[in-house]
Length: 392
Image (tube, rainbow, N blue to C red; front, top):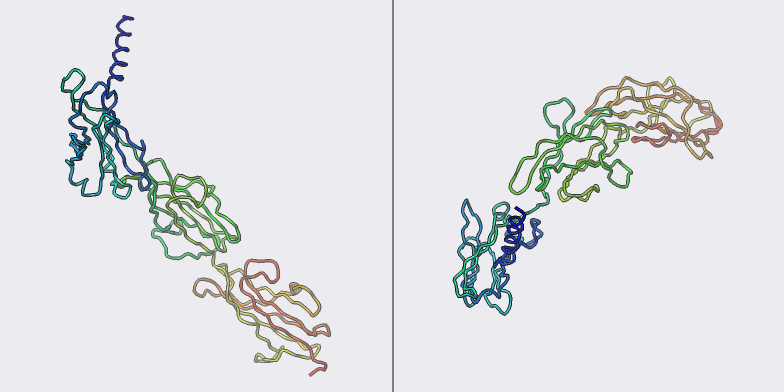
């Protein structure tokens, strides 16, 4: 039994050493649009041969292998597959024993068709050996591996959670939950997923989305797979301008994928507010005057947007002459009922102010926006009031 095993091993080694033709793919794995598809047929142990009739490359176009191209005597290249030749495939070869006899088949990266060109290939030779016998040998067939980088990604689709249809809107009230869905290529590996990253206003770079996404099943499309990916996001006060990115490609760093798309989402925030109107207390109409005597009682009114929450109000701040900053007025304004107008609510706010000798130049500020600090609202207006030297 031991001798039989030894003899079997020796037979396998002998077969490998006496093989007359080999086939190689260069590179072994072709990256679509980056590498040429190259197949090399070469004679090994050429000392065992006296001459060659041909070296031939074939591939399994359907079930059976069919000849693609051959090199004959005088290094003549003969094409059997005219369609490949017409597409721009090239071949070169030599049967000269001074150098290693070979046949090299090349398809430029720009003409490679996937998956059509990624089939099984094999080489064949025929010639006369050292014993003057005609020999014909074939290589073992090889399957050329490939990988493809995703390049196509659809724009993210946006849907309000629990609604049936996508929405074209990109601005929403604070607290709304939205679903973002991207669909696109993921490459030649069906286990690859689409990655999400997010960048809020004033942040320098994108950060990977920490929560898990819902991925569809990968489906084959040509030479690679496609799938969709969905995330759910709850809008907060920080989403004044939030950019979402979906991407695919073999990278772990946000923004370095080979297929990328973006969508910008913002919360509805106030941007418009009217200049304050001024009225002397108990008068019917507003006044254009901005200079009044000491102890005059004024009513200042601002009207504008307050955002998507009807409970929001308009804030008032004041800055007297020689003061460096605005401070909040120490009184409760009178607010009108909020009314919905378009995409957000509007309301007015009125304060009553008694002028004193300190109001030589007093600046009033009315603002709306989600901020507790004077002067940092998203909708702001000002009015300057000063006193005269006499009571009128």
